[in-house]
Length: 363
Image 1 (cartoon, rainbow, N blue to C red):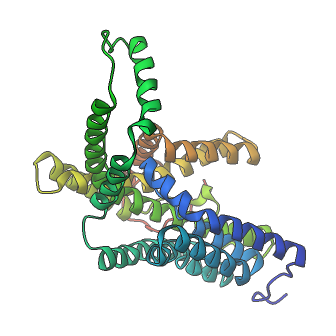
Image 2 (cartoon, rainbow, N blue to C red):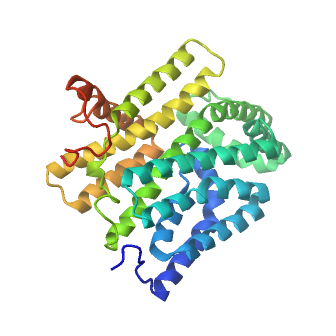
Image 3 (cartoon, rainbow, N blue to C red):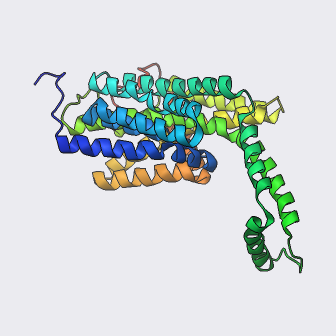
């Protein structure tokens, strides 16, 4: 069969892909807000799914996903937000689809996918800045504050009653009763703290999410090709063959140290810069940790299904639980620098190929 030929997609499979695309596209703005509120890496879920659907069923489901996301975002948040969401989430997935269908070398696809998603995010941020100006987080918090200020006391009373019920059990009440007026004052302080935290954490959450989205979109698109027997040994490399290049490992570690220095020396915006670098670099090292764990489980003869489940659980936990994510990042640093293919071990053993998939990468 011609390597460029695409396997036939049945009408039922195409219809199912379109229905899934419409459902996910309609929910996309709500899911994006939920991810941002959790201060976790903000995955471009629409783009990741679009990469899979584009390879599996063609461009029609991708278009349906984009239309549903645009309509939903426009109705809920306005046309500008729809453009921002599509630019950051869906447009970069085109690169993953084209790379997978073109059967380009896998790590070449990976580099292009990551660059596309990070570039899409930066373009979306430029659109947001041009449309809304600076201080978007402050405006968001001010909107929340205005909404709470408009709420009547009767609407806040149930929350106040719940707090009063919890105070004796916590030992903090000391016979006092919280009033609605006092609760409003405390809420204002919480919103101020939220604004400061969001300003420091959101940039890193977005960048790390874009990096992970590029990795996942390329992986899922090429895995779909492999499942259909349409991939080659060059175009699809399983996670057991993933190794962070030595130069990238050393560069990422050096960038993290530079950010830490900026924060510790009190440089302007040093904390925000460090948090951004830490989350982005941490995401890359977390991927390295999961790949190293996959190789260990493979050597221990774990079945494929159990390995996938373990990696999926750890990956989701790393996204949602800061402690798990930090642990994965530290393990990834150790693996990338001191593992069997680690950057420092490579330097000590003399010059060698620095590609992610070198001659003994199937260890």
